[in-house]
Length: 634
Image (cartoon, rainbow, N blue to C red; front, side):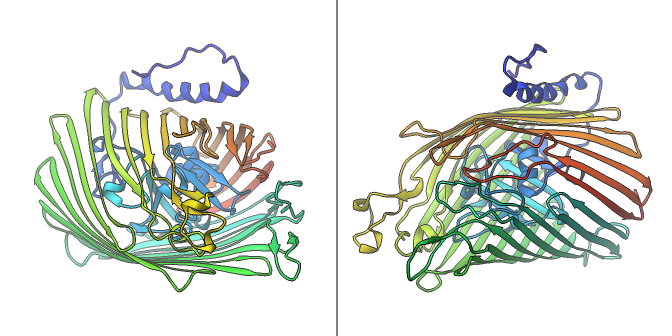
């Protein structure tokens, strides 16, 4: 049972936002008394097929276009941690290298999909979210918890599915221009339309920031450079849809992003090999995603999906000496769903994935192939919903892996349901773990994990609430092994290697809720995470034990004003405990005409000094003002 707190004042100031987040989440509960159930949101991520959210046993978060537009988030990763209980580790401000932790799992345990296509670096083993712009995103679904039985490698912590904009409506267009402190500039143009059996959408955006020095003075490795480290990011996106017949749809999507971001580091070049932090270090990253998908409904009982896609990420990073890291993925998905009864469906899917990498230092261009079969079931029996997934992966490098998941949810009253889920997942070793000279070991096994979770959800007109408790145990963690005797018998490994070492225990509780009362709308999330090394009992690096977010908006038609707060608890990093911090953001919007609106926001209004990662610094107070034009108007 979930107990809401009393209204007594918290004893310590650092818990005030946590108490406020929980109170706001619980404030949604009384709204159920006199309100009928609202229309059911549909999600794709929980079963590989569109299903009502109430039929999904997993912990799924939906971030729709309205939430994205109202958010004060400065990036995709910042949006996720404010709305989905995800923790973020970022080496500086916006545009800097970012990692996300879902339920305390490492960044390599989160699979990121864009319109169903895997993205990310195969050499690093995680998705570079800093390369993506919020401007081209229509909707995000987040599955928190085990997902390898549906999506394969790297889904042990969860899955983030990003949907780009479509044009399946009347002709429309929007232009947005904004400027902010630290030399920040943003501009975007998007348009779309539907004509008979065709629809098209596309857009471009550009963002830039002068920023601050990413590293603080006197950092432990002496890499600080007092210059400012900013970024430039350009995005182009296009999507074409065609319905050749009833029940048939073909989608072609293209996405290209270019990121040029500065950072602080040191080089060790001949003849002295002395550390030199004076060069202008940059990471130039280009990402391309292209996909062609065919959705077909053959009969009321049979439907299918076929998708072919490619993703390429090409990074050039360094100061005077440039290192290159390139990932090429080719992906084929084919699945069929049989609705054997009104509330029963079985999905059979086949996936083929080829990954190739090129990196400075690699001998040749390593590659690997993965073939997978998925069998998934979802059914309902008088308020009881069942889910079961089985998946078999056959990889050319690390062999065969089988995973499974079993879950159920049941209605326990008007608008309420209880759910439970247990599953297995695995994380594939990265190309660096397998092949990097003097570090990688081709015989490394994937990380394996088992998890269980229990949750309760409530949904009513204008309100929702959820609580999920979970426990995840991981073995064969892939990490750096400094003991030379445990590495291959080769002088190249005199300084250690990658190896399967250690176990982890991840457990915690997530609370979230929202409510709308007239012109007022509020949301809150509160997460408690206990992420530890099971062998030593030490907390895992960069994981906060608690995180909370609160937002409150007042929409008076022409005017909208709002406030958002984020609290991140203390977390260990590199032998130091980073201080907890709270940021407060303010926002306002004035629609002065049906097609025109002015926007303003003040980020980190209290000018809090934030150390997101050891020795790194984030931006201070930042004011923004912008204008937006929408046609035909809102």
